[in-house]
Image (spheres, rainbow, N blue to C red):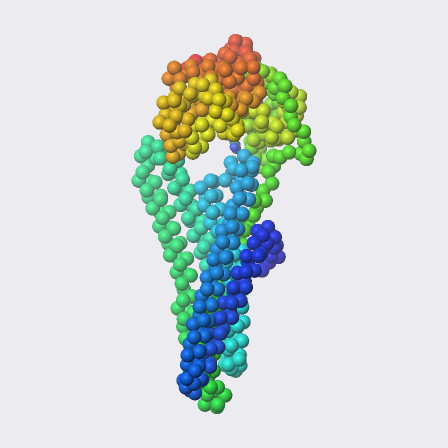
Length: 582
Ligand code: ADP
């Protein structure tokens, strides 16, 4: 085992196992009983054969079978208790690891989430956690249980006849070597199966997500073939894995046969020379056969240890992930008065390694209490500007300030508390309408919720839902239209009552009645607040105090609609192509 692996085990012990030490010790005590009773069973064959079959002792004829029952009973009960305790411990451990993982993932950087494939990531992670927990619970218990049983059984073997025991011991490493070479192949096969199964989950998620695209492009057959190939691959990998797993059965069985045959042959010579009694031989044989299971389990232990350690190597970095975007120690609260936002020479690229700049020397002044509109073609950098304000990403250089306070010098909580985000595609949680609105303020009163729903014109359609505010929406509930979702999203922002509103206006066209309601709601939401709007509609732009024209990550011009129409070619073009239509 390399040093790193040892460090991981130490860390797992310190962070997770030590909390359950009491229970683990109890499980180990039961393991001692398992080992003791298993050895007793083997040992008892010696007096049983000698006293009952050879000497035909009438009292012991009753006592010994009785003791054998007790020994088996003790073994069964102790094994049961040890396992039950460890199952509990392992489930608790699993929950602890999962909690830590969720905590880290919930607060992780947007950049990290951008970079992962959700389906594959989730599939691997759930499997990895199980393997990791296996290492700290099952493997741990087995080490004790099997080592102790082996020690007990070997003591019986040596006690019965040391010469025979030596011969048996020489043969044990042979079995271990077989198990070890198989172990390496199993680890590789498990990894391959996991990757294939992750690929399958990924495909499944994609089929759900893209089913409309599949239908419209009529690629059902293509997708069917593709997933059939994945399934075939998965099937073959699974067969290969189980095949390797069971491959040691014939090998081990044959080896055991050879071992027993050799021992019988050798015992024959020992009995002939009066060096061994028949009762000792049977007790010895029983001990040896009972030792088979712990030997095999210990030999295979390296598989679960290897699997557990490689799983830990994937899980722990996620738990330990340090957010890049975090507070400086003791950073004060941001105090927002007017809410003026200023970008000074802001440069930004999404990935430090590539040279593609998403924002170049941007200077933007968004006046407090007024609406600022961002216009430009798709991919120009408008969302990027919005994303930098609540620090979803941090600028590469330059500075962003609110009321003259650099947002990087103040604590994140106070910054985000002052900002509401109304995004273009509102994602709703699988919960009731009420809880979806309340998401903006978890302790909001019924009146507050009602008020914001009324002001966002959401109340009128909510009243028509089967259970009104208690109707389930989202994946498992009622489907809402685009316009309805937008109104819920505006209601959320109204409830938050933050002085700064970031709004990514929806591009989807709505019927004129809904459209005008949403416009009124937005007007109400942004009244006297600092709002930054990615504008797609002329009516919104006409309301803006200032418009910034964004093109290829640069701020080209700014001004009012009329000013820009006469001064900016890009704006004029944009107006003719996009705005006039809406
Ligand atoms: P807009 O909102 O004007 O349509 P964006 O701000 O979304 O434009 O995108 C600006 C540029 O940044 C585009 O080239 C886009 O491909 C890139 N970009 C946007 N989001 C990411 C991201 N999460 N990771 C990497 N590049 C991104």
